[in-house]
Length: 342
Ligand code: ADP
Ligand code: MG
Picture 1 (cartoon, rainbow, N blue to C red):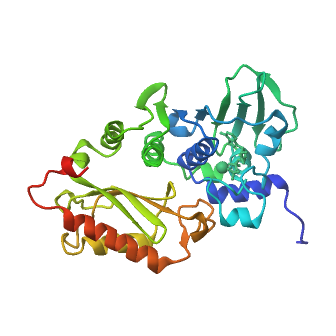
Picture 2: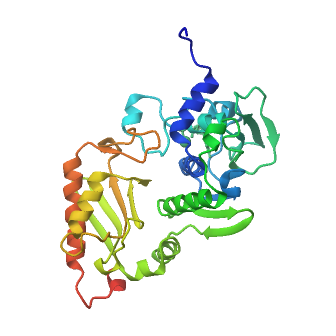
Picture 3: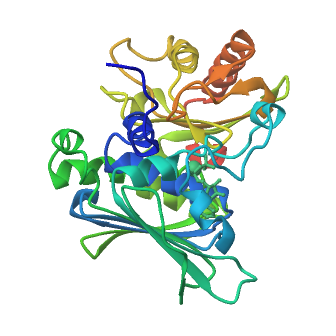
């Protein structure tokens, strides 16, 4: 065969292979967009485990009518414009390919209204480039993205999806993780029209604890201590479980770098080491931790789904985490109530 350029639809579908593995990946991308748009209220409606419908509505900034088509185009973003921006990026997104990828493998409708616009505008895409003009819509300020029939045109991908129940389970786990990344955002989740989660914005300690209890368990609150440590332009806050509240699995471990949930070997190692003296090797600690670092010191462009990051000063981060957690654990004295420490 001779060499020929791929069609833009196929390019997008190939990219979708990296970021859109299952309905939960779509939910992640859409939630991140809503966060980036400054929304403080997000409604997530799911039908049939997300295979039939994923609909996310936010009250964020909205998109200009003129930009709607571009929002679905590949490599088009409002979040960065230069390499320097990329190196300091603070938004969740910046690759400008999520909506393009999703709309190449699903039927997408995008409705959006800027706060100062007279009305909302809507475009629809069904696996191909949009060739119609935006239509007016009564939607309030903010954005709704509805994704129907995921992988309808890529049967090989659709075959890999599990049951509605399993796929919804992935979505629920993801929403809970994201709920802990932004306490200031209210989140509602429905599945097949049934409301399953309703979290108000949690701006004070009491509602924060309620959210933690809701997402993790009431036991966690009763068995955790607050962690707050700062050094070398880094800050670590959050809660760590007392050694007695350990788990046989790593299922209650949440680590966020600048509000982004991250899985990182270096981080895992530092935390494990900090618990070494007080936890049996076969047990896993429970933690919800937030690391704030200068965006320039962490490379989030290491993986398309951005679950992995690279720290510019890995050793420094490791040692900081280790000593912050080690010290927090050492300060927990028997008899001292946890509530007092919180
Ligand atoms: P990225 O988030 O990497 O920029 P996306 O494909 O996810 O790429 O989105 C493309 C663009 O569409 C964004 O840069 C943003 O300008 C706009 N956009 C997407 N979702 C929303 C939303 N919920 N609210 C406002 N703007 C949005
Ligand atoms: Mg995005």
